[in-house]
Image 1 (cartoon, helix red, strand yellow):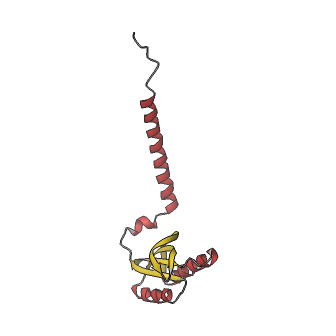
Image 2 (tube, one colour):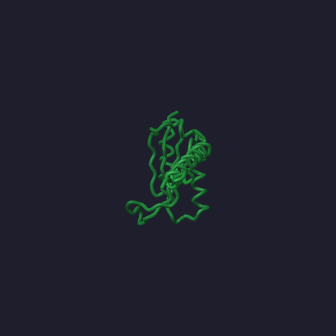
Image 3 (tube, rainbow, N blue to C red):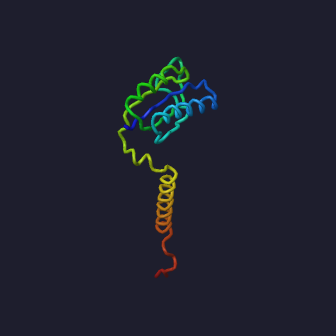
Length: 139
């Protein structure tokens, strides 16, 4: 099985429940013939140019693994859905193992590292701004 990346742009005319249903439906189609590695929901964004007279769209990115024969079937299923403004399926070329790692654990690690770095910087700035005043000054 090869890794693929799918980007959907969903029409902003859908309400939140319809958008979530569509996202779950696409997820279900992919899971029937492969396995989902990661779903990244970007939310509503401005389009670089109008598509079907719309200037905004709801972006969702799926990273998944499947057989190459399934890509044409998925492409056809997405093409007939009028709620999808655009879609594109490409081979995923980044490190798939990094993406398979649990995002929550990675986020926690990065947050801890960032917090420690910020605390170290704050301490060093305090030391530079407040020189040791306990030493007697000679006159």
